[in-house]
Image (cartoon, rainbow, N blue to C red; front, side):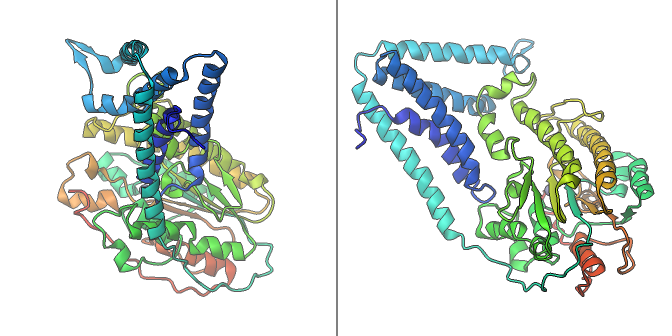
Length: 491
Ligand SMILES: [Zn+2]
């Protein structure tokens, strides 16, 4: 039986930020994502306890010091964000993160000194124990209540029996998040994307010239395209899809259990899922094989971003650790995609890559950059464009490897879920808003395709319909191309 006056509060205070963050990101985060942060936190705290035990220090006093350290560790980013950039005369402290760590270290030492001067530790231990229990109960309660409110819907479709055609090619569904359409790039970014698009055409890709996304957010767009159907009106009747809303949960469920995933699995395909790092597509229980497994998740990045750790990885900004891991994750995504042909059997690969979408972490040659969200519109736009140019480069190389290493020419779909959506940062004149949010990229590599004639203005809702009809003898009707656009989402 746990004694209430034993100092267990550091353990609960250490777990609290993880559970708190999780309870606020329930829909996009799976329980599995808790395992690593909880394991690391417990290992560190228990090791400290072990050291206290073998060195025969006062466990009550050291328990309080440990909780104080945990508090400073997790509140670091929050306090600094509240303060904004610190400036003394001409000296911008933002540029000297080590100095900020030093100040924090001094604060820690002062607190440490005060704690060691206390006369008794038992009362304060009881109080801290009590507070830590309350915090954990609230977070866990919040998680349990929210989970129990969520009744998963299963898009119960009937599948045709498994066809015995081992000859079907591998299918790569690559989503480049926020990749703008050709015309948008030319008009609003003054950039001619022809070299990239012609490179794809020369390889045999069909580029949908005036392609447009059906929806303007990742969540709506992916839920629709993976199910090859328009979403129920009540699901899109949201000002902004809230991920903790029951409707948001249903959308996430539609992505995880997309019709195309279930259909292709029923046809004997292995489902290869690329962990995006973005909570929406960071886990999929249907995956037979998960790529990008060992890179930090967005949940872990968020958790770390409030601690002093990022400061040691980069010089200018506090979200920089996130930049460091974002770079690693994006490059690794392409690298692992190039290796997919070596996996045996028929494969359906779903790779949602969070680029050129922000954060902007690459310059045009792939060099490390960091652009914080409060920079001017022009800086953000330039950063977007440079990241897009680098992504073009990675995409070209990856496709070349996939095609050259596949035994049978694969089907490759390169598509974006929406446009660049710069209204968040820039004043966009009314007429350009649509151009900026909706036109996307759609490029199909369809070897030996014998389906319907491909048009110039297709939308993602029909992508898998074309493929299933053209390669799997399905008779799915081609839907009218509808665009759900709400210009008030970015006012
Ligand atoms: Zn998106």
